[in-house]
Length: 464
Image 1 (cartoon, rainbow, N blue to C red):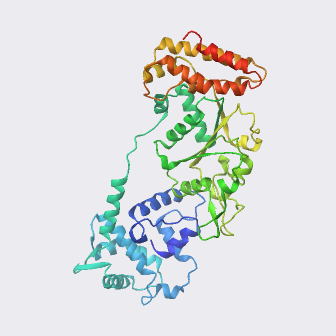
Image 2: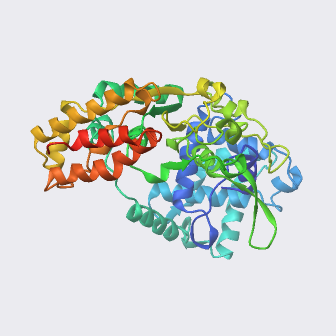
Image 3: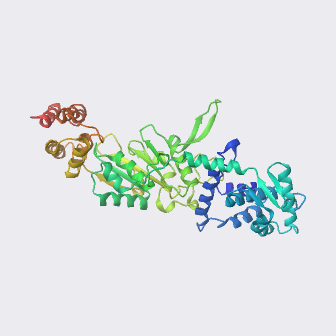
């Protein structure tokens, strides 16, 4: 791509990556840019809607070179990159390094003539540029009217390396979530996924051990349509987390100076903006453990589903330049988790609530849970039925306690072993879970009545 077009795209906030050898643009970089531009061309507010229009608009922009210098047959700095770019396009189309003068003129003479209307001899200018490219060992003359582009081998190598390194990921959907051990009805999971698509932001709330983080990540995979870790960013809020940590702030650099650095959220925003044909998800664990309104800052406004356009962009507290405006693209989604039993956490800001859809996860110890655990961990159904009855009794005790309530129930995750963990002695397994996981939680609940916690522990284990 020529410098003028790159500069114009850069002014629109679209930059061409250079991950190839010798800091050049690789085939993957060009393919990614082309995919992104195809999507942006379809946007009504985007200033151009095709490649010819893009080239024309770019060359109509003010340049350091005068129009006469750019279009004169003797001052051809503007011609050379355009011709080289079209040589690459033609060789890609031919799937060969070899092309002819006739092919090039048929494909591009009219287009180049329209870009340089003051040039009365565009065909001669093209031929002259081919001679210059040959002198610079960029192309070679094979015979009259036939050329070879020496850069084609690099393109083939780049494409081969991309294909070799590309990891095939199987599609991931609602059925996979259910098979992985989700005990919600398939219709419920489908509805949750649709709410995430529509609202863009979702919070899963519930008591301890109800699988909030587990489900959040799998909803993200289903939205992305594959278990693609590079499209998922997981962070955890805590009381000391700040806007400068999460969005953008000044941080020390290796040379003793302060550098303006983007946090994980703004990095995800940039990734999503650069790849609009892919979906990205930020999973925020314990979203109410910090101060969400303070941590998000201006991003709180931009989270709204109807503000996911460049026209809604806002200036950040820490700007990289005076013209910078940031917006959250529509292909970035946020899933938060919230423990509603933690009394040390502040209530969620109403402004944040308005921007998220909420779903409460309950303790689920039904037939689906029993069948899954029995199959995955070889635990007999009769024993699991006993576990269910005792956990249900404990949760009833917790729910009816005026000091606690239903938000303090013990979740099913406590009594759901990891997949394929064979439990050879179910009784010993349950004793360990009760004594090292559930009982310490009960001691926190009834810190002023340890006897109540001890009686609840004994009731769970009695007679096993």
